[in-house]
Picture 1 (cartoon, one colour):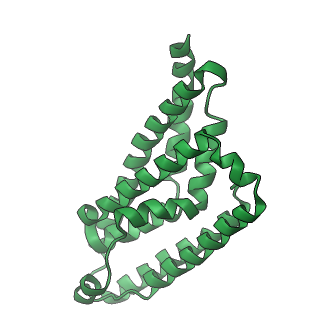
Picture 2 (cartoon, rainbow, N blue to C red):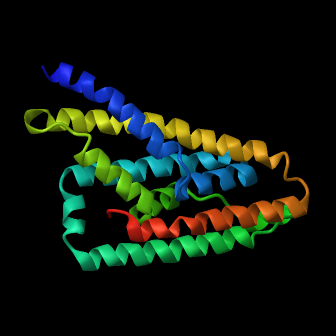
Length: 206
């Protein structure tokens, strides 16, 4: 019986995970930028950090942390303020990063594993996505943890593919950004897209 229930849930998990992870958001915008500036190999720690951070938050939410934060307005507001400040800071760094390749290598570094993981704590899209996975896409009663573990596995596999796709997209774009003017415009666009994510902080469920 649990296998039948899980088999029925599996397609919904795959579709939701794909839709949530492939659409633009702070993580995908940063991965595209990193792929264009540093390549896929140097962006891998950032990608793995995202997956580690999201998995830890996912497990914490399954154990009730998500409802605790929702029930505490002050904590909720603190997360929003931290997210706003850090996203503005990252957008500023991207917009005014050097366009000369030599200076770029000297001054800029891709986000590390730790930075990628910690960013998930204040990423509004991460919180909204994981809250949906832990509530709407889990089975009740005795099958809860079976479905929860399946959700963790499916989401990580699908989201890993999405993250690599956005990074590869950035790498492809880098070939067209050899001109410093084009690079500068690209940086401005990436920064503006990142800032465009800010409304999510105030309309997301967490």
